[in-house]
Each structure stands twice: as C-alpha cells, then as structure tokens.
Image 1 (cartoon, chains in turn orange, green):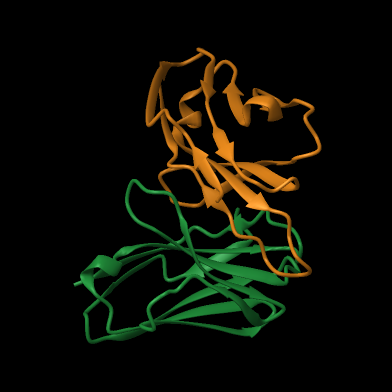
Image 2 (cartoon, one colour; image 1 turned 180 degrees about the vertical axis):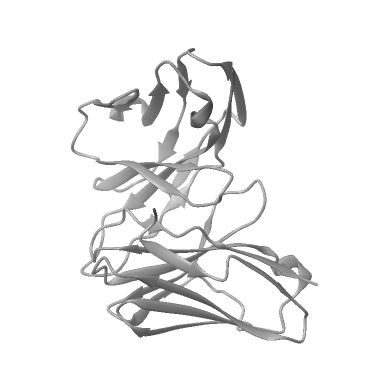
Length: 118
Length: 112
C-alpha cells in the first residue's frame, strides 16, 4: 500500500529563518512520482514540484529546494530565508506510474502547517 | 491565477436540496478529478475522468454524481447530502498519463 507521512503537524519560524519540511513515503512500486503542493488560506492547492523515482537529483528553485533520497524513502523540502507569504499548509504527495491514459491518484500526507512570523 | 475555475466558491444547501458544482479548464487536459477535503485534513480523491469517461470512483456514495459533458467541463451533482458532507470540494486536471494535477480554488460546501 502507498503511504505518505509528514510527521511535523505545525512549524512556526521567524522571517528569514530556513525551514525544512519532512516527507517520508512508502510504496512497493519501482516507478512512482513524488510531489509537493502549497495550500494557502484561499484553499487552492498550488503545484510546486514533481519528481520521478528514477531522478534523485536535488532541485533548487529560488528559495525552495528539494532533497530526494530513495535510500531513506524521503523527499524533504527546504525554504531558505522564509517570508511571511510562505505561511501555508504544505502537502507531500505520492502517485504510482500511470497505466495507459488513466488519470493519476494522488496520495497525500497529512500536511504541515507552516507559520512564518514577521 | 489558477487555470482551473470552480463555481460557486461558497455554497450552503439544505439536506433536501439538489445543487451542482462546476469546474472548467482550458489547458487541454484530458484527465479531470474531484477531491474532497475536510478541515485540517488532506484532500481525498472521489472521482477521476479520463477522456470524458469515468475511470476511478473511490466508492463515493450515490448522493454525489459526477458528470463530464466535454473535455473542458466537469460537474458534481449533489442530492440529499448530510451535514458530514460539508467540506472543501476541489477540482483538478492533468494531462493524460501525468499525475501532477492542477487544482482550482475549490467550493466550500456547507450542508445544513
């Protein structure tokens, strides 16, 4: 069975601090995809990144970086120099490889609520 | 701005009412989804349409009835809901064979 665990329910930091959100996943598939989404209070889930199981390269996008380690089944997300606008709930998600043209089911972790204080 | 548009943004309905939630996207995506999200919980998949055909139904009660009239539109018809069905209903879309879904802002539904 597939499962995503985000052990940190809430994190509070002061602006300009770095913060890492942890994500651990379980799957028996050899081909799978990992995601991070941001959900601000408005409700929309904003897609941040997709990683496939064969690509363990870390990625950096501005103040955001992601560390994928298959050996520990982890896909952690770091925000450098956090800002108040980063305050949101962040979800890590897992999807198996698609069969044919069927749409993909996302399995979400419980989410981490990040609060960045000025 | 999101390219997946959901209407209405808020809906209050009685348990005997019939209402519909609407979702529209013009990104050429041929997979569309309904997710349900309760407060302080992650989204849970309800239905998936692929090329306008229902491909996944996660054992959702029949009081929720999805419809995909064309490749850009997705509806969720609601009838005889219960107060516990109150939640944020999120529509999403993706390219076929791709699982990164793009979400709308959701409809906050309250059943009274």
